[in-house]
Length: 94
Length: 166
Length: 137
Image: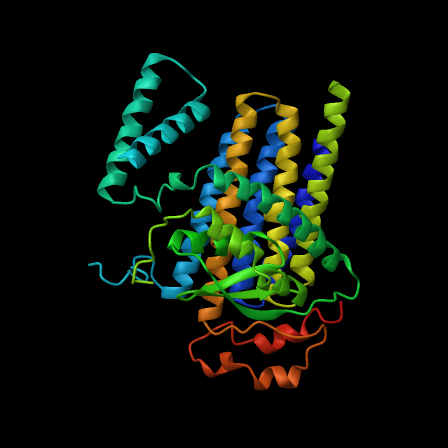
């Protein structure tokens, strides 16, 4: 049964990859890559169960965090063209 | 101080959960690293009612259960839209009023809107949220204001006021 | 008893896979970025939730289940945040959502499209072509 779920996730990842390649705007690609990352988290966890190695869950947990940070970093790069920019600092603060 | 202690407890609980090895050396390392994180967080001045909202308490749990049911309902509805061969979507942009007193409340409201498929919050201005809904009915659901009332409810009777900076 | 738990977890796993697939199909079928965010939301909430719940039942009361719950909490907290950041970035760059019925009028859309007036946009200027795509599917 884990095998069927793994297969479904792989097909879904293929569709997300197709959207990432088709575009047409850069935001479509970022969205597709973000969804791809969420599915990768699920895939790693499923593989851990499929092969009987629960250690994979730690990798999956770390991937969930990296996926979030990565999406935010790419969006910041698109928006400001520079990762070092301080975004909108709240008024009244140095 | 209460927030810092609670943050330390949560961090150490997470450490115990993730390490799964309970020998004195590793436990000591865990305590030291949790204390270091709490110290750095206090220096960054992020340990407050926003960074670590313990004041929401059990009201947040009740809200999450209600939100979970809403998420399941709207998921099934959007899944039906996707599988419909005619793709009967009718996207609209609506501006909603957010009745919350604090920034934290507005963030919870906007995130709840995004978390239910069919509606995405695009931009928060002073007290309004711009929302994209894939079908008009979803926007009308939000305009009825039930989610707004519930989020305002979990803020409690004496929420920290909105700063002028927004 | 064990059989019953297995059946419940299989049903949850299969339902979650179905929702993940539906979300991916929506990612292909929906006409523009803002609509596709709803499809991606399906995978992030119910798809991930049901699959992780199915694995939790297989895990029982162990550290494995605790880690699965932690993964679910991370996903539920981070996915709306990144979706909001994406929507906000796209909107403030002048990318207008397609509004109206299932068959939008391309001429009216181009007339109302302010994105083409903003210089320095490499890709988001092609909003007009977004409306033409996928409409036949």
